[in-house]
Every structure is written in structure tokens, then in C-alpha cells.
Length: 273
Ligand code: HEC
Ligand code: HEC
Image (cartoon, rainbow, N blue to C red; front, top):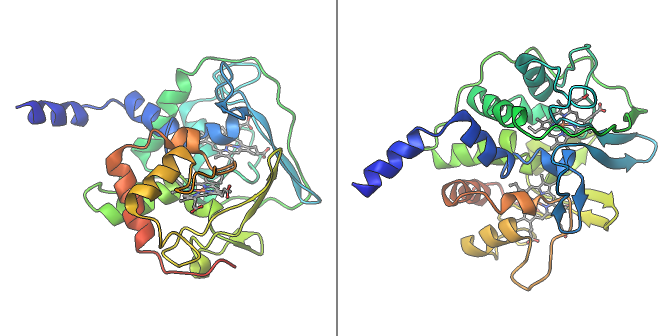
């Protein structure tokens, strides 16, 4: 009886509940768009934008204010315009959103999840905050692909496929954790092999190998793997550096974590480059 009631509640999850779960968990737009302090997202500044990264000679990227503030945020954009920004990297004025926003993977965000993200964005506190414009010395593509029309849900009952969806289109774990070759993550040959460097106030962190190779997570139990993803603390007590989004991943539920781990376990074992 209790179980039946619980599952009917789960089935009735609203778009906003789904959005809140995703945004404060696996999707974590805030890991880029919310100013980050040493102890996590800055209070009162959710999604208000921040300086992100200076890739010398290539680009200097700022993540814009995406709160509903009409003047400095995206409060004046329609749902369709925000969806086009997320899945196609296109702004209402026709300009293209540059890296490192993972548009290539967001193209695969399901219609339900992208609408859940919109429902969440609409009720975030509007914050007046002017963020500097990014500068790109590399050419941006005219588009990231043809317009995205309909993206179906990936069934949660197919654990590995759902794990691939979470680690890919939803969470872009694989974008940070795959080495770049000629400016693009080498998904075809080195999926999950790590070795990508990130410069920041923390110095340089290098993304870990998350394949089942001995360079990777072969020696971590499922429990330890879940713990390091959720807490950023390795079994030896050492702490992961940013930009691994542990303050968000703490909220990934057990079912989704099991799917992510099942997916990682079946990747091709690859050495760290
Ligand atoms: C890895 C970092 C990163 C992540 C994750 C990310 N973004 Fe962005 N986003 C950026 C950057 C950087 C820009 C600006 C790029 C530029 O200036 O061309 C941007 C631009 C945008 C814009 C355009 C805003 C404007 O005023 O031009 C929107 C809307 C947006 N992001 C929404 C989102 C949403 C929603 C998510 C989560 C689903 C998300 N972003 C995840 C880095 C990120
Ligand atoms: C924005 C980039 C980024 C994203 C997104 C990201 N990671 Fe990471 N991750 C890193 C970096 C960088 C490190 C290494 C930090 C360090 O060594 O201090 C890391 C470390 C890890 C580790 C630690 C492995 C070990 O043994 O040291 C695991 C496991 C991991 N990430 C899994 C994931 C999963 C699963 C996701 C998606 C839910 C994810 N990461 C998303 C950048 C990222």
C-alpha cells in the first residue's frame, strides 16, 4: 500500500519538481552560470552569471546571467527562445553561443527535461547582475546542426541507455572526461579517458579517467564511486578540485547514480592519454 502510494506520487512528479531535481543535480547549469565559492554556489546569486575561463589566445568566456531579470538576465526571452539557446546554441538575435557550453550534448536533452529546466529557470530569483561579454578568437560555427525538433525520453528501465543519457546529454560528464582532439572531445576513440586540463583559481585540475581501465575507476567499488561523485572525496580522503560539480551531484538519487555507474562500467577500458 505504502509502496503503491509512493510510486503514484513519483508518476505525478511535476515539471517543476523534475526541473529542480535536474538543476540541483546532474544537469547543474549552475556549475557554470552561478558564481562559485570555495564552499559551493554563492548564496543569493543562483544563475546570475560569472567569469568562467580564459583559454589564452582562443577565448575568454563568461557565463551570462540566466535569471529571470528582464534587464540583465533572460526574463524577456520566450520558452522557445531559451530552448533554442540550450539545444541549438542560438540566441533570439541569431548569434551563436560559444564554448564551453556543451551544446553538442544538450542537443540530446529530451523535450520533457528541457521543459523541466525552463520551468525551473522561470521561478529562480531575478538577480540584477551585469556580466561581461565573452570574446572568441576562434571562429564559432554558423550552427551546431539542424534545428532540434523532438527528442524522446530515454526509458529509465533501460539502465545503461539511461545512464548514457545522464552522463551525456543531461550531465555532460563525458565532455569533461574525454580528451580533446582538434578542438572536439574524442568520443570515438577515447570516451571517458580523462586527461583534460582545467585552469582556475584552484591552479590546474586534470579530469580523471572514468573508464574501467587501471588508470581509471577499475579499483573503485560502486559504493566508493558513488561517494566520490557525490562528495568529491576519494577513498584515501583527498578532495577533488573544481570544476567537477560535486555540490550539485550530491543530490543525484540512488536510481540515477546506479544507472550512471552501470554505464561507466561498460565503457571501453582506455589508458589516460
Ligand atoms: C560548461 C559551462 C556551461 C554550462 C554547463 C552551461 N552553460 Fe550556458 N553558457 C555558458 C557560456 C560560457 C555562455 C556564453 C557563451 C558566449 O558568450 O557565447 C552560455 C550561454 C548561455 C545562454 C545565453 C545567454 C545570453 O544572454 O546570451 C543561455 C540561455 C544558457 N547559457 C543557458 C544554460 C542552461 C539552461 C544550462 C543548463 C542546461 C547551461 N546554460 C549550461 C556556459 C555554460
Ligand atoms: C566541468 C567538468 C566536469 C564535469 C561536468 C564532470 N567532471 Fe568529473 N571530474 C572533473 C575533474 C577536473 C576531475 C578531477 C579533479 C581532481 O583531480 O582534483 C574529476 C574527477 C572525477 C572523478 C574522480 C575519479 C578519481 O578516482 O579520482 C569521478 C569518478 C568523476 N569525476 C566522475 C564524473 C561524473 C560521473 C560526472 C557526471 C555526473 C562528472 N564527473 C562530471 C571534471 C568534471
